[in-house]
Image 1: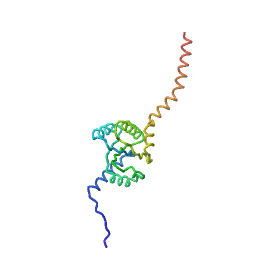
Image 2: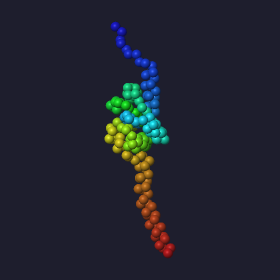
Image 3: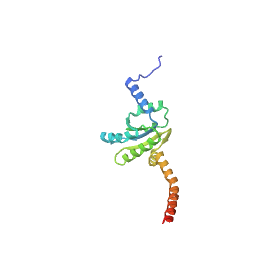
Length: 168
């Protein structure tokens, strides 16, 4: 007896391959339930994310699961339940900035974040919200530089005050 094999429609295979190709260009994925959002709201969110080189894409759950499996992204299947959109980001700073934009947008819309997979690490709903509140790498560097600069600038002002007092 011949082995039974299901025939896959070519358009479905092409859709999965296209999704896999797009997803492979990114290293951060934030999963959201977009139920109740209008097309205008989704377009507005995409426009806000574009400067951060982030993308917001509504996906077919089955195709997205297959694409993620082929990309060896594990543990994200539970997020592909119900209407799902994926925010795609590149790099740690971009992921942080994009999640900030997403959470600012969540406040005024019915969009609900389900979880995320960023730089090989899986985040739950609460963890990704906390991640969105963290400063970016550049912001942290500027904070450290400001902290390092403060004592030196105070020392220079003190020396200048001594020089000014002796001139008078």
